[in-house]
Amino acid sequence: MVLLSTSVYLTLAHVLHRNFDQTLMNRAKQIKEFRDIISILASGTFEDEAGEFISFYFYADKRLMHISNRKSEIRLDTEIIDRSISGENVFLTIDVPNMGKLRFYLSPYKPDNPKIAPGKYSRRRDERIEGLEIHSAALCIARPLKYNDIALQHLLRILLFAVPLTILISGMGGVFLAKRAFKPIDQISATALEIEENDLSRRIEVTTKDELGRLASTLNQMIERLEKAFERQKQFTSDASHELRAPLAIIQAETTLSLQKNREPQEYRKSLQVISQEVEYMSTLINQLLLLARADAGKEYLLFESIELGDFIREVCSDMEILCMDKDISLEVNLCPDIVVKGDKKSLKRLIHNILDNAIKYTHCNGSIRVMLEKDNDMAVLSVSDTGIGIPEKEQLSIFERFYRVDKARSRSDGSSGLGLAICQYIIKIHKGTISVESQIDKGSIFYIKLPMTSTLTGILHLTNVRDAQNKEDDARDSYKTAAIASN
Ligand code: ADP
Image 1 (spheres, rainbow, N blue to C red):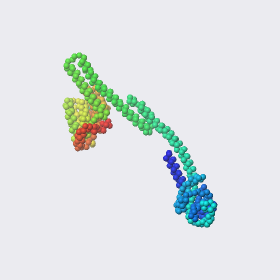
Image 2 (cartoon, helix red, strand yellow):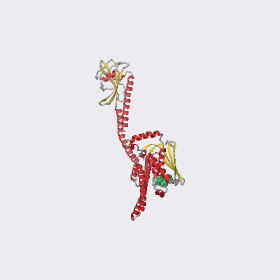
Image 3 (cartoon, rainbow, N blue to C red):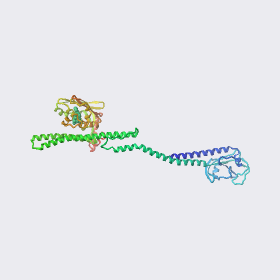
Image 4 (tube, rainbow, N blue to C red):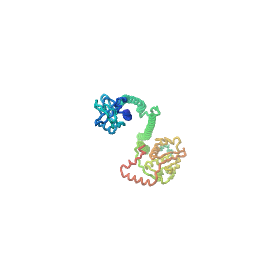
């Protein structure tokens, strides 16, 4: 407002002054065109305009003379008059006592008729000049600036009143509007403050469809995700304690029973075998829980390198062959060569091991398992099919949840925790792959694992070299901590 007002004021002042000067120039031109203007002026019959002052200055007998429409003379600097007589146009403003500020325009004048009638042309009052000839003079026109000044002062008064008033009104309006606009934010933050960890079922009321409405629904979606995460966490903790309580109860019952009275050595042996079995189950479970906890916290460190998947799977399968032989299960391995993926060997081994272990566990004796590795565009597809008990269709998605087991009683007696596939899914996620299952009850299941391939075997050499170099440094592992883990 201040800048605008200042520029309006200055522009108007400039325009008024320019127009004023232009008017003086036009007036000078008009006067110069009058015939015998000096004689008319001297005779006192010239009709001047609104308080203007007109003079001709000239030299006669080497003395500076003037002829004016006014009796009173305004003394001008002789040097300025000389400049004008010798051909220069001059503007100047002079504050004249009793008359206020006057704007002067001096312009050279060469009369068509140099002879002028006799009269009082001298600066000295009573000196009369006869038969004078004027060849060059300076025409001086002066007009009072007071009307310009009055207009500018008027504008200034308006601005000085209007600017603070406008600022005050717009300020008050701004505060009012801002308060109204921020009210929903206050409501959102008040509700957000009331929402506590234990009561994530509350939601922020969405009243508008504008940015704030969208903010509220985004926050609601976030709270919903948090609620689900907390629920999962609670469920996980309660499932974990439940899983650990069962073997502990068995160990406690077994020891109490054994200690009640003296028993035969084989009875102690049997009890210790039961205890050892339960301890082994607990140890596996705790390891799995630790792995998942580390994964959740993003603290699982991985070493990514190029892996020739065919050789790698063959190695894991040969480790598992003994388990197949125990149950007379035939294991067919069909692996396409030259498929390279980038991954963490330890995790991928655990992944393939879990899937194969399940296939063996849930396949009857004399059944068969087939492991196949193929290419599908730029994905490596590992499929593990078995002729086992199969998974009911409605449970095929749930089996990847933590502690989910289709047949709870049976899996528990097998030493299964229901965490195996949850771990597999986590490993698949950090390798940017997918895992899915197709299954039919009593016919068998096929697990498909898809992993993105890297280009060629040269990649292996290169990456292995990089890895070797990195291994020389103590902090090599940190540099391989994957973005996937970080984002997890
Ligand atoms: P578990 O340790 O119980 O095997 P998983 O997470 O590995 O836990 O598997 C979850 C559940 O999925 C198992 O309890 C089982 O009911 C079912 N399942 C997994 N793999 C197979 C399979 N190959 N055949 C039939 N059921 C399976």
